[in-house]
Length: 221
Ligand code: IYR
Image (cartoon, rainbow, N blue to C red; front, side, top):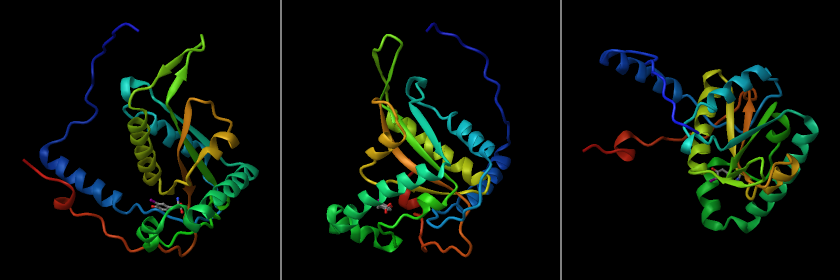
């Protein structure tokens, strides 16, 4: 593809004071995001999910290859199939495959192999990383920094969903190959994670967690 450049119109122009205020407000809002493991069955408009996916699709990616695919699952029988397959993997995970150290590290979250949210939540978004694309001649086109790119897009998706008051669970049953089979995805794609999306169940509780303070996660020179 030949090089083509167009003018960049800076979308927002703030003073330093306005930037401080806006960054504080955004942080105050983002720190209210919590991972939720108990969902209500209340539906979510598809248009909202589509718009949040459009936001995810604005993410930067290696060579702008956009190496992601999002499968939105609302169909009850597909959700049941996913729950059955995920719980099968999770049973083995919690019965020993994880190893004692991993299970001890997880203990404070109170998770187990039981995953009712996979049927109860109105929307599951299976996120796939495209390791390569296949062109019309059938050649494989390698994607660069695919994992980093799909990770960034997923973070933006989680942020977009939080912005409309929905809650999410980043679920990573391991291994996740069953998603490729159930959702009939092509060979160049690997399941990246399963995002559970909806409204929280009534009176849901969350673990009391601390986030790192700035000095514990950043430094200045
Ligand atoms: N995938 C399992 C285990 C699990 C692993 C991590 I790392 C977590 O932060 C939470 C759970 C499960 O979903 O239960």
